[in-house]
Image (cartoon, rainbow, N blue to C red):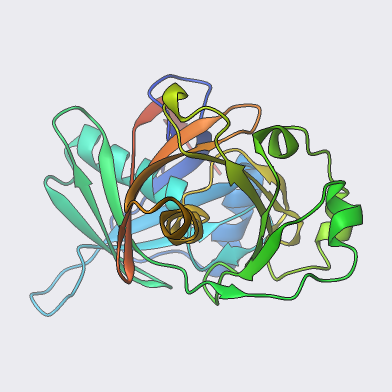
Length: 271
């Protein structure tokens, strides 16, 4: 079984968000085995994909994502990593359609090596600020939004980029505030630096204290900032220690996520 580690939403190794990618020729093994592999890889997500056959299929590959502790409904960076592996190994060309828990997703490779994902836009709804958010984050919150069923995060707006970068939250306390975790965001201090907004993501309920670069979160960040900045096409910087850029394009009920990826490790799973 071949396994690859791919850094996603970056064009250089050891940045962006690393994901494990495993391609199967046939049916997936049992859920317990997939979870064991993801726990062994011990990255925020490991993606498992297998080809689908038959003209009646609405997708080309089945795709699943596991954190070290659970399966999730949606993951952007591991989808980007999977599409990168399919392209670089010749297993797929052109636009690839994935069948996943959150519906059909597509990935389109470009000549410059970047890949555009087509994901469902998160249905943002204003939310009352849960008790304890300010204390858990250590920062004042300007507004809060629920991100819907597939993501399950609380999106909170902070005053400025400095506040987002300076967060040192109590992640155990954040676990009580939403199903997956908390997305903290603010406008860019200086958009001339190449990004329009910043974010950081904390997901203790799925075993990820801080996720380096989160594609799925940008399906909520895209409509949030497009409404405020008056533009459908934006660039977000996830200001984790590894950092990464996600170019977002709001297209109604779909959001385009564009980024690059780099394979850094390739080997055989022997167990």
